[in-house]
Image 1 (cartoon, rainbow, N blue to C red):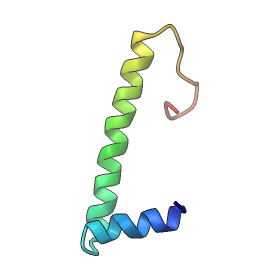
Image 2: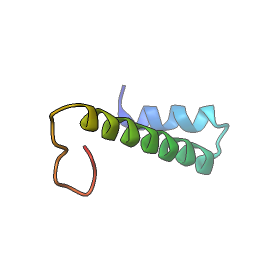
Image 3: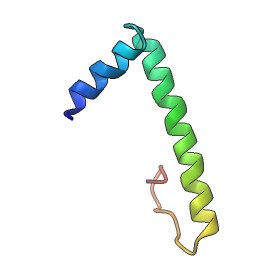
Length: 54
């Protein structure tokens, strides 16, 4: 599915509340970053040396 369609679908799920949709995406991103950090800590793989984990 094209990215624009996914964005439209997310905003639609939040009944047109763009702020709510962005907040949900940011919270999800924080959770995924924490999970990724956990997996790096549990493995022998070093995270990339960039500002983000991915």
